[in-house]
Image 1 (cartoon, helix red, strand yellow):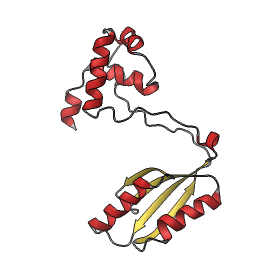
Image 2 (spheres, one colour; image 1 turned 90 degrees about the vertical axis):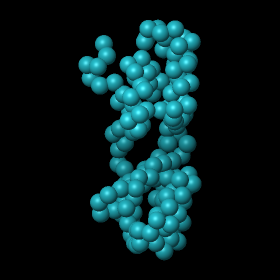
Image 3 (tube, helix red, strand yellow; image 1 turned 120 degrees about the vertical axis):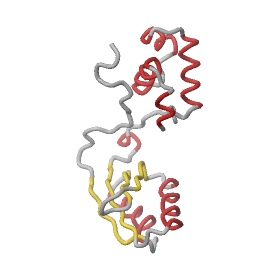
Image 4 (cartoon, helix red, strand yellow; image 1 turned 135 degrees about the horizontal axis):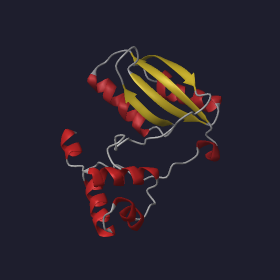
Amino acid sequence: MAQVAASIDNFDRRILEIVQHSNRTTSEQIAEQVGLSPAAVQRRLKRLREQRTIVADVAVVNPKAIGRPMSFVVQVTMERERADLMDAFKKEMKLHPAVQQCYYVTGSADFILIVTAKDMEDYDQFTREAFFDNTNIRGFQTSVVMDSVKVGLFMPVVEEGELS
């Protein structure tokens, strides 16, 4: 990780700031903002994607607009922490479309999930498939999201006062 960070200069950091706000910003617009040519911006973006500094170019969809207005934060505790069982659970969570994020964590729970659903019945169905049918799940605790105060994957790449 440190190797990748070392290869990122202030131009790269500014470009990353811009494309995180909107990846539809053109190379010409970025070039104007950072003081490079559009061709130089394109080369840098290509390198950042090849290095996996930029891992995806996506559209962020409003869950309410597609009928999935409910979100849940779920703490999952495993019965046994064998590597094969943990890997199997990770794989299942990666494949399940309702699971938006899955974190393997320290503390009282083994995993923290962010799950989306149409309604409580839909979430109940998810728990049956993902948890109750899995004999290695000791338990899970669900918090229903009342208000999404901040949702995003924006990474601060420019420290305050670093660039003017």
